[in-house]
Image (cartoon, rainbow, N blue to C red; front, side, top):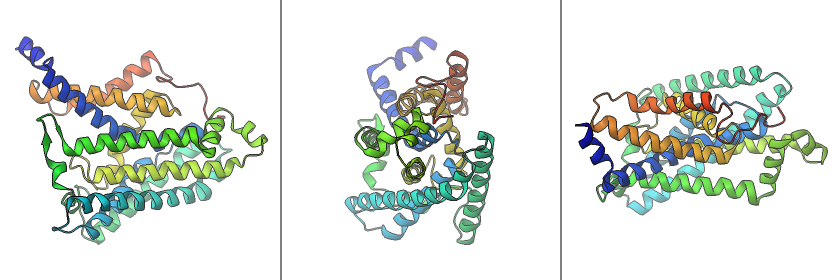
Length: 326
């Protein structure tokens, strides 16, 4: 039995299936965690509201899709509207993030980190409760996935290609890859990206050189929350996640796990950690779906990776001792 299982797992077809599914999961994880690591990398702020912002992005994107996509809409139009929904969610969440940074977080930069943790946790509770009240008022599902938005997905994303990977998983892989390239270009090819990298090393020196660090903080926080909103739209098409109020907690935990494994405040570490977690998760999921009848354990593997990393290398794969001048 054990030998048969190992032989099947090591077959080229199974390895290819697990590898592709792992890359697709990595694309999701990097989308979820990218904004969180950018904010912590420059500002040293652990944003506990990140999951709630992702959930709001999922609902905003879903509203845009449900309002514009009909039963007779073609695949090209559905993809176009998905792009519009991403832009809407990104813009709205970026504006909300900028307002939160200016109105709530900026006044407590000089306080101990505990103040920022308590503040963002309080924002999480407030946003979740507002979302719960609104979806109940409009008759949407508050605790289960909003089914209407799943029907706006193009039919080809529901198909399986080569018996290896689904169309939606390929789409998530492509979306994650575009996010990595986009954030990398922002950090390496733009003026604000230069400020972010310099500020993550020494924000006081950056300020002494005449850069308006407060404005950079606002831009980075808005970018991080905008990425959270875009990730929410992507999750809305996935029935395993979907638009629901519990999505806030469901995305916050893996986002923190990926950021901690990669090393707090390093985008390169977040990308590598997302790949590691995605591949391990896909591998363990295959084993537990095919040979071990205990469905709850695959989700635990990413937390086991976190425990091992904290024991072996507490600062993470590419972590530094201090970020953002803190």
